[in-house]
Image 1 (cartoon, rainbow, N blue to C red):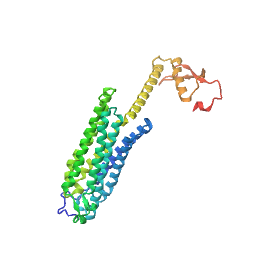
Image 2: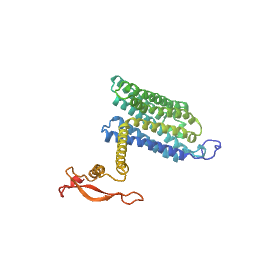
Image 3: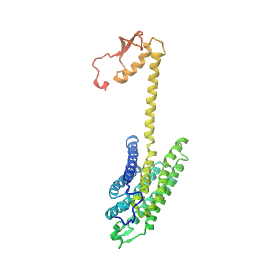
Image 4: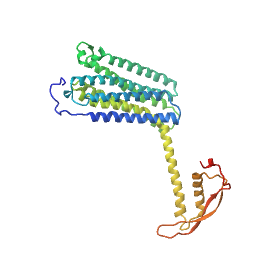
Length: 369
C-alpha cells in the first residue's frame, strides 16, 4: 500500500475512462487536421515543405505521449494513491517522467512549424530575421529545459525509484515545478508573438481586407494553446499533493488539449485551398441543379398543358451528350412519340421526341469512354 495514511473520503474511484477518452479524442482531432494539411499541400498545391514535415513530427510526438498514457493507466493513473502498491507508484512516476519530455519537444515542433509557415509567406525581409531568431530560441530553450528535467536526479532513475532517492542528489519539488513553469512561460510568450506576426506580415499585402482578417484570425488560434497552457500551469501546483495519481488528472487533460489543439490550430491556415475547392464544387453543383430544375419547370409547368418539343430538345440533347458522349457530327431525326402524363389524367398529347442518330455505325470505342 502507499504511504498515504487515511483513505480518501470518496473511496476507490477510477477516472481511467475520462483520461482515455481525452487523450484518444484529442489525438484523433490532431490526426484529421494533419492529414487534411498533407493532402492539401501534396495533392492540391503540390508544394510540401519543412513546415509540413515539422508538424508531422509534432503529431508523432503526441502519438508517443498517448502510447505512454496506457502504461500510466495500467499502473494506477486516475486512481487514489492510497489503493496502489509501491511498485505501481514507482512505475507511474517513471512513465510520467518520460511524458513530460515528450510534451516539451512536441510543443517545440508545433511552434517551429508555425514559424516556418510564417517564413514561407513573409515577403518582408525585416520580418524574416526575428522569426529565425525565435526558431533558434525555441529549439535551444526546450533542449536545455529537457536536459534539466532529465538530470533533476543523479542518477536519473532516482526521480522515480524510492530506494535510490535516499542516496541520489535530486531537485526539490519546488525546483522541479520551476522547470515546468519556465517551459510554460516560454510557451505562452511565444504563442502571443506568433499570433502577432501575421498582422505585421499581412498589413501591406495586396489582398482583400476580409481575407486579411480571416488569415490573422486563423493564425491567432494559437492563443487557445496559450490559454490551455495557463490553466495547466495553475493546476500543476496540485502535483505537490501526496496523491499525484489522482489530483494530476485535470492537469493532464489540459496539457493534452494544449498539445493537440496547438497542432490543429497550426494546420488550419494551410487548409484554405481545400476550403475554396470544396466551396467552388458545392456552388457549381447548386447552380447546375437550379438551372436544370428551372428549365424542366418551364417546360412542364410554364407552357400550359402542351409541352413544347423545341424547348425540350436542347435540355435532352445536352444530357444525352454528357451521359453517352455523342460526337458533335450526329444528325437529329424523329423517333417514337413520347406521351407525358399528369397525376389523375390521361396522356395530354403525344410529342415527337428527337434523339441523335449517328452517321457511322462503327464509332471508335474510346469516344464512349
